[in-house]
Image (cartoon, rainbow, N blue to C red; front, side, top):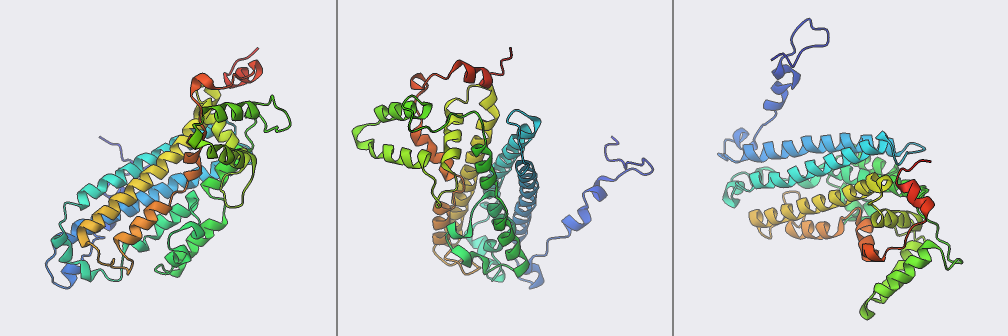
Length: 343
């Protein structure tokens, strides 16, 4: 097979050279070998974490391309651009699933195996994985919403901390999705003065669906879909569009927008799965001892896992769904637009 060939066809491109395997295969330098302390599993520990960082690099590559597309002045909701966004976000989900599965490999190392070299790692720690923190910032996790607040930057080198701060100053994926939802032209307006408007009809149907002990949900409905709040990442207009997409996703024109929202929820779910698996692995390996980087170990990971949901406001919209049989009928004109019908 001559798959790896140079563009000029003057010399075959060799697999080993193309992948720069000299650099990769010689990038493992166990501290246990340097200090002549036998620790067989340190090689596994290094390779697994190097693989994590390579996958983080790929996630950045995918997310950066999505940010570029979503930053354009106008994004056609029925276009190859949106298909590309959805496809690449779905690829991110699959990569994140793989990162969760890699923990299975790491857990073949026993606590005693880890103790053979653990003290040689100080003060290095996974807490210093700037690529992961940078990725979270690009997705939309703000410093003020992190469990450790601005202190999470302290273990990082200055140049790495500046990358994360710089990402927060730019529109995140969450910001751009909010902007995209706000300008979607299909969702009916919020016309409180018109009792026959779509949203007033929907509100009344939603009210009727609530049990007595759920009546407080109506106040939440009015706040989320009728009022903007500086503490929220999604505006009221964006929430209305997102709910409309979730309710009527069966229409062809809403397939891709729904898949985009669904991909964001999948990303949050896989990040959560990774954090909880990581937390449980740490508890299994070191119990209640502090991490090599000085964190509280399992307790820190537990608190971060419970707090670091980036797209939680999309997940919260499920509280305001109605079953299909009770949905308001759409106008013939709107159904025509959503169904790609032409005259």
